[in-house]
Length: 450
Image (cartoon, rainbow, N blue to C red; front, top):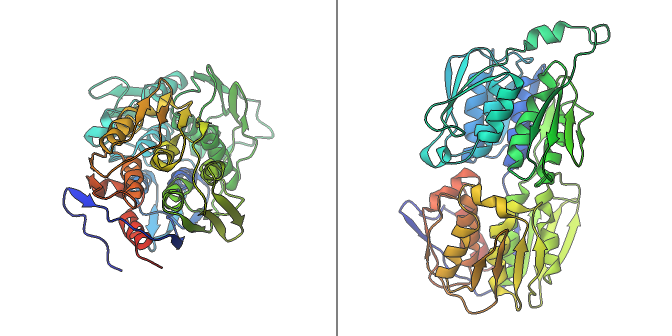
């Protein structure tokens, strides 16, 4: 099958009237891949990453770590295998400029990573990324002793980071068993903002002489993403990370190069699973099994609470809908990236769906509450924005021309709705290249009768 033509400004989604029966392979997790790339860059020795996704966010991270890496740097062997030659904690010194495109995760991880280097590093992105907040991370790095100078607006990109100069190579030569203990650095940060700030600090924390303790001034949201960070760090040999109710603690240490397999992206998997719920029939996500690291794998359980059947085994996860869907009330604080996915399913249920606990997603790639509700209303959906979520009533809906607001998750969610709604037109469809460049090809494969 050739890729659908979405070279223009609008992609027209074609409907399907049959029940689905499909096995879908989704790209590797960009959340895991970006964390693994930071660990591999700092590690002692060589790392081979497999099932690396080819989306724009990961491509931006690969470009940045290749510039920061010493020696041979990064080798991309094919579309999914990347070999990283670790720097042993000693990054290539600045000055240099690092472009992070539209990738919020990449920009935050790279900003923190540059704090371990020597010299000046400018981090910048495309205009939509410049509008996204970065201040909590910048403030934390300043508290640790790094220089952070904004280029235009405080708390936003572009920003120039002057490294802490902790001396990774010198740290490697210290006999930890004989040296006197070094006091652990401490910073404070709100827990109810993007978990990417916490993860960025966690990833560099082992290379601070005494490690790092992050005091949480508010309750931690998106806890599963912090757990992913700790799990990836453990995969590179760094154990002892503690994620508590009021703090996160990371001991000093070093990453070790390894063979690392990246599991399928559970956030991306939510869209074909949502399609099964909307269209009926079944969709199986290959290789996303019961031991998945990603909290977003729980989206299948959300669909189960609406009336779908879910089977998980070592080969993957299957969602099947045979009966009508029921609406639900759900706190999605730990599944915040999946709000658009559930919002796509909710109008097809036979009762109200209410999503709470996600007020913070207004500062994602788009305002994922206001923008999402606005586009749903265009489709005739009775949707209401709440202080910390949204409410969606069941009822008649129809396709419309919807804007993506530079947000890949909105584009993919509305694409799934278009399988059942005549006339769904997606503006700026290429935005999906951020995480799943072949998304429209996948959607077309679902539409074609088995």
